[in-house]
Length: 316
Figure 1: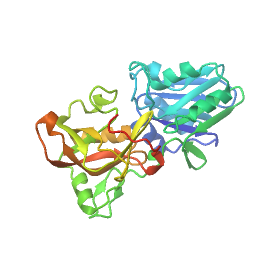
Figure 2 (figure 1 turned 90 degrees about the vertical axis):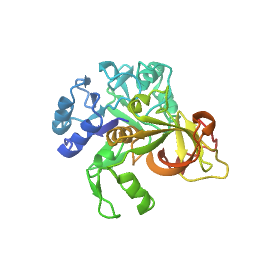
Figure 3 (figure 1 turned 60 degrees about the vertical axis):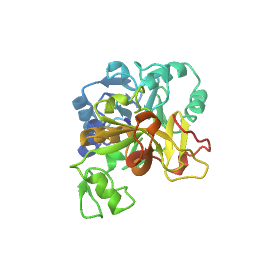
């Protein structure tokens, strides 16, 4: 899901945070300076990105990319120009027409030449994403969406600020993600590294969509619907709201059996657990399609009620 870093403190990033930035988001590095001197720099060499983050004292906005839309190449590295001395950075995903170009690249083409006021107005419509717009002439960087500050440095996501390993309160199991399960039984099922995880997907991870490549080698179990009525909201991206709701729908999903390595990659894509959170919920297999019926529990990426726009869908 990428990360944007706005650093005007005059101090470099810590080695620990810089390492997380480039290891979690390892598909390209870009930087624009805010001191009116030489402008922008992009590279696929993440070692160079790491060295810049840990040594640079000039004010800047930087981006580490994790490819979700488009190809991993130099053309997909942020930032993207939207005018003379003006650049766009994005953290998140929006729906676009082309699968070969990144979504930010396509949006930058649309925004190119528009006034700063118009650009700001349009970016606020994509409230599921975080943005930064840099104006090198005026030495400014305007940010949009929810950001996180640590020692005066702003980050578009806080997963790079988390400790690498936390100990769960349920039995002392050490894991590389935050304990987000509601009960010890749910936690133990999810954390058992000797088993594969049944994963329910309802958005861009489904077959035929842009992120399906992350799970293309997983075992397809079948089609299913949420056993309870859930709120699936669509605002550029689909968001399933945590908790059943009387006005919700039985949401259609695809079920896959994934190994731990695949699950880790999908966790990174979804920003688990700081953006989407992977919860265990009940499903009913669709026997009319697969020939199999019955109930099954599966992990599903969900968000809190702040993403509820009041319009609920049965599928994406």
